[in-house]
Amino acid sequence: GVIKDSNKDKLDYIAYMDGIAACIGAKPSIPLLFLKDPRLAWEVFFGPCTPYQYRLMGPGKWDGARNAILTQWDRTLKPLKTRIVPDSSKPAS
Image (cartoon, rainbow, N blue to C red):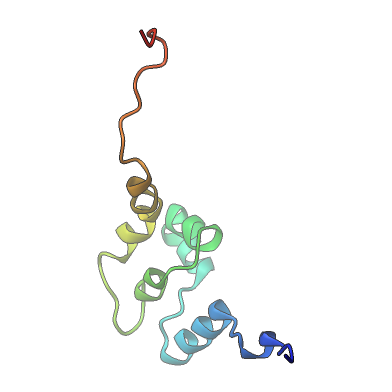
């Protein structure tokens, strides 16, 4: 067996998406966002890269993109909280 270097087959997703978004005019302007909506700009810059950020401006602009970005962690963590943990201050018996 020959071990193939798979690094050549990988694509840098964020750089690729930023390039495409810049070509069509949908890449968000972080400095402009910091002036208009600092909380949103903080989430876009320091949060995870999600497709919602490419719907903030340009063609395909979506009014719900801001809310989707600001609540993305809630939607990520909610499925992990599926059971009720009993109060640990009470004795088990």
